[in-house]
Image 1: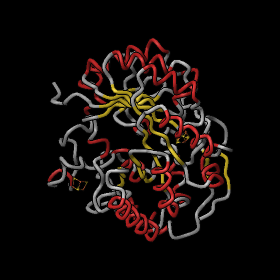
Image 2 (image 1 turned 60 degrees about the horizontal axis):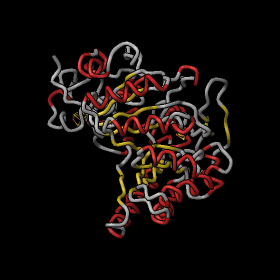
Image 3 (image 1 turned 60 degrees about the vertical axis):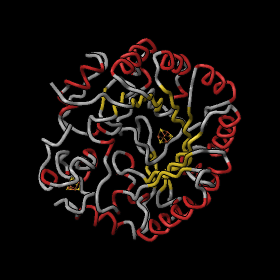
Length: 370
Ligand code: SF4
Ligand code: SF4
């Protein structure tokens, strides 16, 4: 029997459909089609199972969760079974009527992603015309409705110079929190790494901007910021450790330890159609595979940080070394550290074109600017 604790949060990926086409999208390269999505009754059952398992928060995410017409019904059900609900959205489909419906159903928090602070650049990165304008309008509606707002700013080489403006925009919109989220390089972002990885100079400037803003905006805006893996000496505690705090359900019902885990080959991730969440969380081979420290190779196995960062990210280890069971190369002690050094050198060269995410068909490109 596993010694695992219950999870704290569930990331419910309602759909991979999304009107935007961000080249760093964290969805897998093989996107689930709408016809494979879980139906309303199954999501209701899964939310009940999550609450019974001990989950406290559900993050309704995607793709774009607002493409689901049953979202308010599911938010209501989450509220009825005692889950705190957060909407993670691009917000381009969020109008007053929809927000009113969700607030009445018990939605407690909204997180809106922004691609940049200037409309032309933001729309180019999102791959959608007028997206930025729609996001600004939706953010104003969220605050008008009295809901707390987090601005999620995915930062990279092509927008990092606008970080001061991003911070001011978050304050102007009335956000209580700004997540300065550096791109994570797997899936779509790994394909686009030469277009997105910031230079060392950009990163150092961004870190100073955040330090200054944190001091100046204390009590007004909380800023989440961590140095991106490619420039860190030690990895982050990815998801708080494999199978320790979070679980993720894909649109088609796969239960995963994180949103990127479907990129790992050789894993038979269980489906909500096969077993209930408690059985999957405690007993499945997939959730126990990298849980705890017994699986670790050296140098992690004898490292004093092994229960702090849990050896870093399994998906990044696989993406960079071809083996999910190796130490994350984001750690300077990893024997594979040179793969990051090579990528950082690449970041000093001109950026490549974007490959936009899309369901099926050939990837499309556009010219990059640095
Ligand atoms: S990252 Fe962009 S494309 Fe991917 S789900 Fe979010 S808004 Fe849509
Ligand atoms: S050796 Fe492993 S446990 Fe130690 S800091 Fe590096 S990744 Fe973390």
